[in-house]
Image (tube, rainbow over all chains, first blue to last red; front, side, top):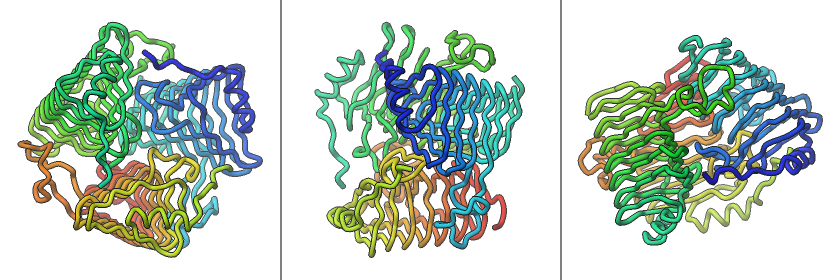
Length: 190
Length: 190
Length: 190
């Protein structure tokens, strides 16, 4: 199928190490992810994590490279073992934790902050975390996020749950269910 | 307008032939689509089909090249005459058929399978088609899919219907209507 | 954070001038936007506008360059002072006006026309503006559009309002409120 050209694990680990990322035993990369790591910030990736940053690694295609942005000195991104993602953006001002065995579909975005405050005065240049709203995000073990899903601040997606393609997740989703829509709601139990 | 730089039809046909795709009389390409064709799989494109894989061909822009993925030996993608698409992804495990005169808007995704099963155990590596759910998709003649639409497994979109931008289509849409939303519902008859 | 590599303002202004765009005092570019300007069309950009066309300028990533398409001789795109955008597409057949101090999130699309008519006969090649539906769009001062938002023809988004990520805006949104969903509805007052 011509979609299996991956980077040697040791090369991928070396690349991520240079970028300041701690990686597990092996890493499966299609193309190189983009890493934005603030001084003092932390990005830790488990064993056998797969990251697809080119259209060669996923038949759905990716809109851009995997992007891992830990934007403040206190920011952390923690990704468990055996988790895979394609064209995903993860932005952490505080903390984004992704469990083991998660499937993060093509072009998903996960962010624990809103980038700008709702209050109108000085919105563009106000970087005060209390004004902006930064609340940690947790994606528990074995969660599957469908393509184009957006996970917003303060959300926990419970273990084993499945989020339908194109959903916008504004509130936490319990474990063992299927959820979907904009905004996402629980559709049924698994 | 500077957005009209297309590949000569013969060159496009030769490229697609090398990739194993059967094409009709003429083909209109802006940039080269990406083709993932499993041994035994089938991709057939009609006459005067237009595929836009660069931002030069559509003022809305494309997120990536057109991607045609027939991922299994029994997979088929059939595209009728005079149909156009931009930055579209089509993934077939069984069958995706698109009719004549269809307008597939920028960055649409059409897939007849879910990539992973809902049941939690072994979700990442389970490739059993019965577990995953593969059901053919049909987009009938003269359908117009708006930008960013996602068409999921088992859907038929009836002749002449129009799907609003950003819709997620989880169930079939009858002919001669406008539908939209996440999930998409019929909004009115044309 | 490695995401601050911008083009010198004078170079950006010179590039845009060559493309036929009128710019204000200073311009902040990450990568070069794509400009499609029909003969007679008009694109005017205010002072201190920021346009991010690469993943270096926004930790959320961009799907493609900023695209400004004024597709007809009577088309105009007007962007106010101190407005920023990332990976945004703006398509004007008549008029798209964006105010001062607006925040246009990653991968937003704003268009004042539908590209094709709803009526089925001759849909692909019918370029009659009356059939297609072209109605000016206005994004008032200090509006914030979240990532992946789509703004469709005829919409006015009122001053200070905030549109949630992933929303599809089909009808006007009043000032000083938060709106979201597909289609977008007012959620609360600010």
